Image: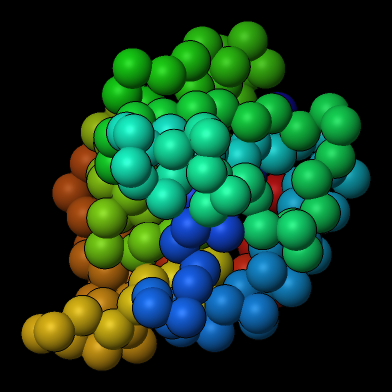
Length: 179
């Protein structure tokens, strides 16, 4: 039997500001809430990864930007795991939580496509997890060298063709994912 976990990375107030507009942020929250509800109904786990930045960073635990977006449907039985690097596995208890719940399928979502989401997808694949990266389940901001939509499209293509022990990630829209 397959057990799934939805991993929602860095969907925090400090990542969604007027100075750092994220592609389709409102639509993403709606899709993530819907996907989280399906994962919960299937008996899976919903795990929010929250970045703990250093002093002076908008994601520092004493700053308003550290909090998860209020529009996210966070339930009492969801897990929140703190991280301090792009990799949600590095120096966190994510791996232990997945083992404790016999999770073998990860659905990795959140912000930012080109940093924490990409690093976590690659780390999950390297660890042999069956990994789904929803094509419309992650976001980023425009960068000086590429628009957000190009970055998202590029990463979707890379993850779908990634050489890893468990194969590449499954890349499909959120509404096509069966946890």
